[in-house]
Image (cartoon, rainbow, N blue to C red; front, side, top):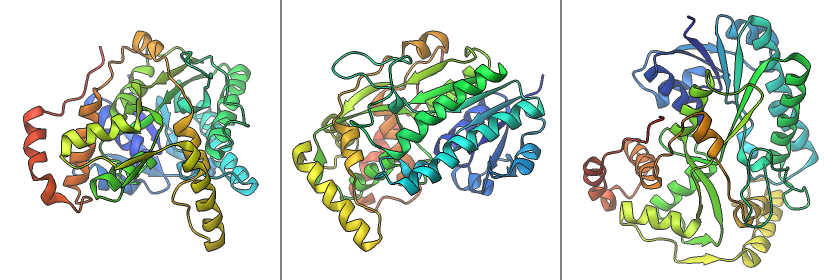
Length: 360
């Protein structure tokens, strides 16, 4: 049996956690990325085969994927998450998120891989009100959420379905919520907000909520889907929907740091976000926050992840364990300036343990 498994985008947040979980599960991961050497920054001391490739370069991609029985595609233009929409950004992100993935699918099929497991996102599913969202729920209405990342991920989803229908190739999509946990070196938008909290730079919060999941749970879903996932299916991976007030309360309990003093409603946050976007355009900088970011937080959405629990045997990691392990990683990497205030944290984490839930 061929245990060699490709991880396209393996040097990123989800990718590095997937590489670590693959090694633990007895597989031989091959990190494929534009800069695969970055894997050493988040997985120091581990010897992992790396192969440089850009998914726009078919020849190098073909060479990189050769010999791998399964391909995990966890790459994507994550810089556009919650970004403000523009036609130029949209076209560039379509080229990356859609055409890039299609190149991976075609090349994986060409070199003889038996299936591809793709990292998608839960935000391309939406049902208004209190009804649970599942894998068959519709796309968000563009009038509700005009987000470059969401639009291109929806286009990616449609491209996968068309490719599977045309070729009968085995493709499975994992659709996580907001991913949190260790090795978020980027950091992701959620990782940045966590760092801002730890470093005392988050005096104000938003009255909203977001879907959350431990990055290691998503990695395990990818691994189980290699054999147990049903070809052509998607699997939502959302542990729960948590309000920002609840999330910062969890962080405060772990660290002893105060929660944001004020949580402002969308009626205030949205005009402020519009102003931030205008200022960013004038100054040619990145806005502090965007309208789409606020919209993501205030849309009432609750997800049904029972398919992943039933078919992949997923057991979600408790929220406090996820938060504790993410904080500990940032502290160990020297990313937290208030280390003195967090002195009791190390003892608390060692006493409580940080073992995530395991798959059944």
